[in-house]
Amino acid sequence: MPTNRPPALVAEVSDAVGAPHVLHAPEDLLAYEYDATIDRAAPDVVVFPNTAEEVSAVVAIAARHGLPVVPRGSGTGLAGGALAVRGGVLVVLTRMNRILEIDARNRTAVVEPGVINLQLQEAAGRHGLIYAPDPSSQRVCTLGGNVANNSGGPHTLAHGSTVSHVLGVEVVLPDGRITWLGGRLLDTPGPDLRGLFVGSEGTLGIATKICVRLIPKPEAVRTMLAIFESVEAASEAVSAIIRRGVIPVALEMLDREIIRIVEPRIQAGYPLDAGAVLLIEVEGVAEGVAVEGEAVVDACRRHGAREVRVATEQAERERLWEARKAGIGAIGAASPAFYLLDGVVPRTKLPAVMRDVLALSERYGFRCANIFHAGDGNLHPNIMFDPDVPGATDRVLELGGEIMRVCVKAGGSITGEHGVGYEKRSYMEWIFGPADLAAMDRVRVAFGGADRFNPCKVLPTGHGCATGHASDIQRALATPGVYV
Image (cartoon, rainbow, N blue to C red; front, side):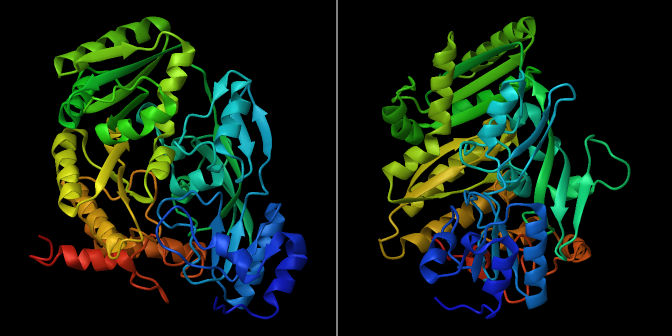
């Protein structure tokens, strides 16, 4: 494994964080050359700091050596955001996993970046509160990674994504300085640097403490499963529900392919002969939940639902959600490999876009399982393939590019919650012009990161960055007659 590691680097970072918390042997680095994407890239050294001061020291050491710095949490990212594309220092924040404060009276919490999302949920629950953003990977993903990617989840439709719940962030800047962006209130004086930082994918600095807002547990919750004969009918029902003036806290879709994968494992009662199901949840005061629940049932029936089931017990509700959140893991068990996409389209375009997604997958000869946040048009096609079949990986990436192009042409975007990362940086030119991209680059320079802090991510160009498969796909899609 080639490395450009300066001879003194390992000794210096070992002095900063302790030798047991530094990895540099080639066999140890192998585990950190990938996240949950297809691409691979090895760092020169992996460091596990335990405090903001240790992060600051490591960042300053990397700066002296002119090395890139790449932040990493649990490594569950789906856009290559934690890949050390140009080597350098990989700063893994999993040791910084303490819940520092829960202020039930003011409904806030302060946590370190390595805290697992579900751990915060459970801790807040003991005070009658919840932390609303709940990605499907919440059992393993970290709050720092959620902040980096502005993660969403099934309950984003009503509660918003991570940026709506982060009040302030302690940040180590690319020169090693420690500062706070935002505070303990959502609206602090001056420019909203907190909002700018959330979703910056590790390119502006490293979060070392995060202050979040918590919300009360709802008085009542109603969870429903609407069963349809086709994805198109379920997609029509999504818009119909919103037109009724109801904003469910969650509105999720699973198609036939994913139902047949996950139901035998979880046995939640999803019908194997359904074309698609909608998992719908409304919450609030009991009287309002009753009214909205009836409106949802009526909208689904009027748009082709053959049955709408209402969970009557907490255990039944939990089983329905377990099937939804276990979907991605079930795909991993059912296929040698899969490529999970993330795009956004207007709700009204869901029927047409889903037809195109399924038609493209069939044309390329790959199984495609769809499990996604239908309420806000956040699609997650999962393309299943065998990487040992010659040419399969390249064709999967080509198909992914075509699906992303469909989303953009429908008036959507290239990501809803997984981020741009390394995987989709070339797609940025599909939705932003040169002036927009230049402005983003100037922000990065202003924070001091330039091309050294998480390089080759988000923006389509960067010093020393390979073109990447995304640009190849972009050129191919612009060439008439490339695909049959």
